[in-house]
Image 1 (cartoon, rainbow, N blue to C red):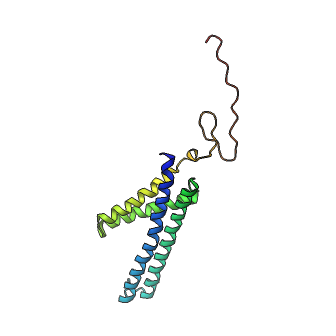
Image 2: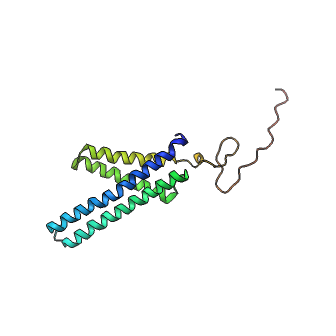
Image 3: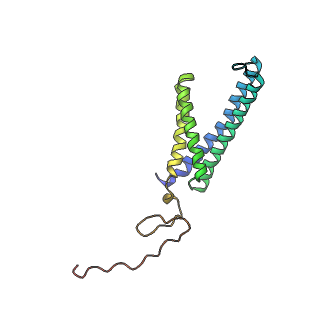
Length: 167
């Protein structure tokens, strides 16, 4: 993938995830209001516990999406791949979106599925675009094009081997 496309992909991913964060909190707020207004319970569970759990899930999901957006934003601004924790966070976010997409087909319809798969695609594209450390700008290269491990200077090119006498 061209290095030019990495930044915009990561920045668009960050914007989409950041826009999705308050949306999921709002959706859970609406569900909590319905549970509270109807005094719903599940198998005798206290309705107040259901309301609190719905709010907690909404806020927790919003914070997680905002953290994923921050990881993608930092990757785009720095033009470097996310660290191990950040990649794990983005992978988890992609898996959750894929599972929600599978459920959304039956409950909501194909439009919701397409939207969730678009988000999965953006997250995966961000991860793939920053997949190899050697592609990062400023990575020292050894002669022959191999990437040098971090913390070591690139080896100095030595003298070229002499051509065979009969050539």
